[in-house]
Image (cartoon, rainbow, N blue to C red; front, side):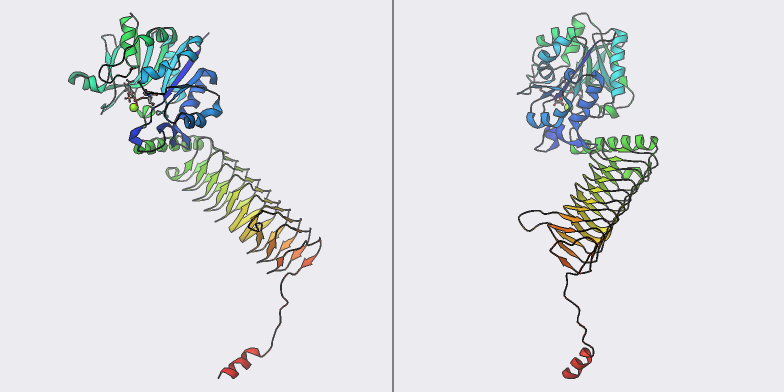
Length: 463
Ligand code: UD1
Ligand code: MG
């Protein structure tokens, strides 16, 4: 049986080079905080959230809150005394589990679960004391360098500051990602002394400690450095974001989604999209959105935390937040579904129509220039251009109910709370303040008066 794997995520640093008041690991790439990417991969690998411990320090409460939904543990490192010291903070929680301990960084979010599996497999195959992920960099500046012996094992990791010119010329660097045998880690790590120059406890010193105790440390060299990109600046953050977006759109396309000019499209990590849906340039599909099959998402549309069933057509420049659109709905161009809406099957919402907390019934239409707020609108209703539900009197929000099959004439003002019965008509330009029963025409406007000859009489007077 394979051994249990515990994972420590070091995420206590502030990240001064971000030039931000926010702790580095809270910045987002691919629509998710950096640390959450790492936590998710860690849980996937350990198979058990309780075996994942995130070391927090700077803005500990916010970092905890960002990942608390995943059920993993936390260790507090109140003073940042180095990577070795950070890992020691996990000892109480992880020591009992035995097996293997994988160390990850909260600011290295691109690492794939498949790579971590290879790391664990290599460790098991070689029976080494530890395995460290390395890669060759053209510009290795700032990283720890990998020192190997004649048989290719790692004998030491030398930090940039301590490197001799020969060591500094080595291009193979330490990624900071390791897999340790838990028994050796927890027996040797507490004995590592602080670095003389910096006063920090370096986790990298474990390599020499293991060698000194007669154990082997093996490298796992990656041919590409992409997965190991550590985020230190906003520039690197945008690079990571680009890679996440690229991974996401590629996967969607392989799953049968058509994406036109994918390099312009933004799709968050948790979004799902069904086959044969077409996503046009510059669309943004964000948060926990689910889109069905055979839909079309128009250029420049922004959809957040919403559900779109199959065959939904969204024309260009439509904004949708926390809404549910049933099958065959057509919205846009330039529609705003602000929040909390349910648009039933086959309904059609056109340009410059805003919906908020509104249910629009099956097959109903609101094609132009309307505000429908806090409303329940039955099926087969036609809402004319310029219709406004007056849902707010400055103090409270009130509801509008429109019954099945009714027709609201253009430029009507429905003063809520108000109810329009089924199969009724509201005449264009009406201000409706009292209930309209079913099967009724409501005229809420002044009667028209025609004065024949009035313009010419006026002209004659003025001349
Ligand atoms: C470390 C490695 C270096 C490696 C590099 C890869 C050491 C001594 N050096 O250097 O060999 O090439 O990573 O990126 O380990 N952290 C804490 N508490 C601390 C210190 C750090 O939680 O007290 C966390 C940071 O938040 C960060 C990670 O550990 O997520 C790495 O720390 P950082 O200071 O960036 O280490 P490097 O100097 O980059
Ligand atoms: Mg670093």
